[in-house]
View 1 (cartoon, rainbow, N blue to C red):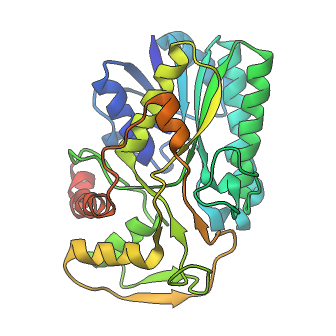
View 2 (view 1 turned 45 degrees about the vertical axis):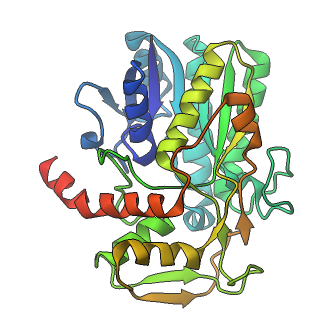
Length: 330
C-alpha cells in the first residue's frame, strides 16, 4: 500500500514526504509544479505531474500504486490574493478538493488527511482558540477551506471514508537536516519575507497594520515549525489506520508572537538590522489568532520538538541562504 501526497513537491508537502519515507512508507506525489519543485523530493519517490482535480488521473494513480491514504496539501494559500480572486480560490481549493474526494470514494480509499487552516475561525473571540469555536472566516481563502471541511464531514457520513482535517496556524522553518524548505518565489509568509530582506534579496519589507488591539499594534500569530506539522500528519495517519474516527485538530503551539517580535527574532539570527516599513492593514487579517492545542496532544499523542521561535527563524534563514545553490544544482 502507498500514500498519495497531493502538492507533495511544495513547502509543507515535501517535508511530509520526508517524514513518510523515514517511516518506511511508499509514497506517490501528485503535483502540477506551479509552486513545487522536483528537486524537493527524494529521487526514489514517484512524481506524477498533473492536476488534483483530474478524477480519472487520481483513480489511475490509486490503482497503479495501491493507494490506501491521501494527504491533501494542493491548493492556494494567500489571503489577500483570495480577496482579489475569490472564484479562483473556490475553484482551486474547494471544487478540486471535491473532485479528489470523489476519486477517493470511487477508488475505495478510506483514509483522507486534509490541510485546513486557522483562517476558518476568522477573528476569534477566545484566544487560544479551541476547535469548537465559532467558524466565521474573514476571507475567501478561509471560506474555501471551511467548505471543504463540510464536504469531508458529509462524505464520511455517506461512505466508508474517514478523515482528519488539520487546521494549521502559521507554518515556518525548514527541515533540520537542510533537505527542503520554503522555496516558492514571491512568497508572502512573514518569516520568509523577513529572511529574504535580511539577506538582501529584498531591499525592504512591510508590516501591514500597526493599529491592532495588541501590545505593539501588530498582528499576533502562532508559528509552528514545519517538521512538527508534518509529524502531526503522521499522528493523524496512524489514528485513521488504527480505526480512529473522523475528527478535526488545531496545529499550533498555543503561543503567539507579534509581527514586530518575529522581525526582531530574524534580526537576531541575521546579526544585523534591515529596512522595515509600516503600511496600512490588509483585508482579511484578524488581530490575533493562537491555537488551542490540547486536543491534538491528548488524542493523537502529538509532541512538538521544535517549538522555539529562534530555532524556527534560524532554520528558515539557513534554508534561505542555501536556496540558490539548490536551484542551481537541480
